[in-house]
Amino acid sequence: MNMKTYKIAVIPGDGTGPEVIREGLKVLKAASQKFGFKYQTTDYDFGGERYLRTREVLPETAVKELKTFDAIYLGAIGHPGVKPGILEKGILLKLRFDLDQYINLRPVKLYDERFCPLKNKTPKDIDFVVVRENSEGLYKGLGEFQNKGKKNEVAIQISHNTRKGIERCVRYAFEYTQKNRKRKELTLCGKTNVLTYAFDLWERTFYEVAKEYPDVKTQYTHVDATTMWFVKNPEWFDVIVTDNMFGDIITDLGAMIQGGMGIAAGGNINPEGVSMFEPIGGSAPKYTGKNVINPLAAICAASMLLNQLGEQKPAEAIESSVISVVREKLKDLAAGKMGYSTSEVGDLVVKHL
Image (cartoon, rainbow, N blue to C red; front, side, top):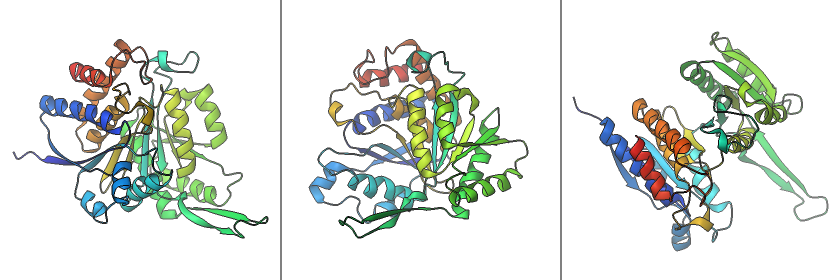
């Protein structure tokens, strides 16, 4: 039998990105040796340093090239020497849009109650997934200034939502809930009482698609209520589907209740194409090169990447190993406070595989 060799594009990026990706690749290598899957990596130097050197954010051929890979593994984008927005829009948003990664998948899972800022919440209380629409809404970049610079200036930002865009996101959420979750509960998070056009379309689409999944329980919550329940009763949630803007906000709150940015990983997913996986924290430039940053989010992103490729056993083994390391070894999840260096944490995960 000829085993497939997965092609993985690696974008270490800026700041501490290369350090955490190095640990993720270390774990990936150990998992491949243990479980027998094959892969090859190709590095790309997209990020702040390249931009400062060449004044080019992404080469024209980048998207076409990346489409030939099975997955993309990203460190972090953001450089103190580059004006905010240039790299984020020119790399992150461009790749998401051009590769049509229309799902942002964010598991919110607490591994150890010591690291949860909420009182009396344990790992059984915080274990849900947010499915965020990743290509439309307010992030489409549509809008205009009127009378710019004058006293009567107006800024208009348009939330652009299509039936097609919403339906494919909602359908992905139903499929995901049905296949991967024991409780099979899906919540639509929106703001139907104020955003009466966008969320009217979201709500109608959600309940129409729901008819095809009778075994999935559905409910609706306003976004403001969702943030309250994340803090008070996170155990109420199983899978949440929402739009781009609300998804961006509630997933950061999710990261805090699961133990912080050091543990939070996400996937930008095109179910029919190339998906990109990353730790969701930023490039943390102040910690660059100090070997103190927590690499676990990047390692969890590698686990998500394998899962998307259909390699469930090694994906689960990596997550189990991360849980063991968090519970048995680490003093804290914050940079410099773990009780171990970045590379030592990577070694511990390999040891527990």
